[in-house]
Length: 494
Image (cartoon, rainbow, N blue to C red; front, top):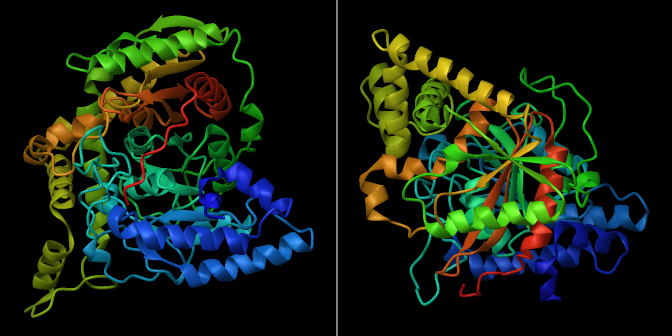
């Protein structure tokens, strides 16, 4: 049954529990799909098929004895940002070399404790720094979608491009991802999948390779809103090993899917109507507003006045934290070490120079610059003050509305090797224009596929919620999902 790979996470878990098929059969179907298609898509940088078969066999025993857990026997893909005990973890950087962690990240441990099966490690931008998955040491990921009448290879978005491409191409039921400035929501929008970034602190960061610690957050990329709720439930937990982890009870996320949104107030920020945005993006936004009105929601105009400062603020705060976090990679304790060095300083300099890619070096340099003695107050301290203002904008807006609806991205997927974006990093950074604000404010945000553009490529709508109110975000997202009726899949060329 090769159609097994087309199942949603919910349908697969239900089918396993009712013994319509075994985890072994499901896992073999995905292994076959990956072996056939991954050489062209490049979503997986490492496969763990032997481990997957062992986990599937264990799950089948548990199901047979009536001891099935929430994700029992479900094959997932894991972003190469999550430490997996005994399995190579590189954050897709040469500097980490063949690092094999002796410990497990809390998020992945939660998944294994719930019975999930690991198919392998998924490609990503190096250290999660990128919007196109072209900065990976293991090469770019190719979007399963192609524009109508074109054979050009497109980006799946970044940094979780491998996660999004694997879900879109049916190489796993669902995947873990992470979001520092839009790295779950932008790839989801580019690949016609669903992605949610929960409130900062909902999921533990222990065992996640750090990029910017005050912004990084784990989340899932899935085929449906319901699947997102299910996987998010297992990924999130309080963790004493992460000082920013929230010690509060988790709601039943799945219970919010399909709930009525009648009477909810939907905020529409004028500041997100940007010059030069394709008319199709605006039209989809208006369509989303109409769908929610038809479902009984009330539309409210709101203002987020500091939005225009969000990108520059993000690209000061994130590189500053990256500069500090990446100082540990020095060629001494683990990972890549330069050869033929003459001394300690030489070891540091050459190992880092050889080990880090161009985009990571650029961000380390920006971060080091804004933290340096002469510029700390002028850049970093000022950025922190603006960040506070951006968070206050949301606090004020949520006095008038329950959730905020915006586009997810300023365009559909663009071509790999886009020369304008390659020549000017700022053009690439503009991909995050609609997503970085939620990271700066620590709020939940979700991308839902809502239509196709004139080139036949997916476009997404973004739902932003109040802190710790993922439930309402999921309710709104499920209404949009149902109204959009987005069931299109990429034409199989791989």
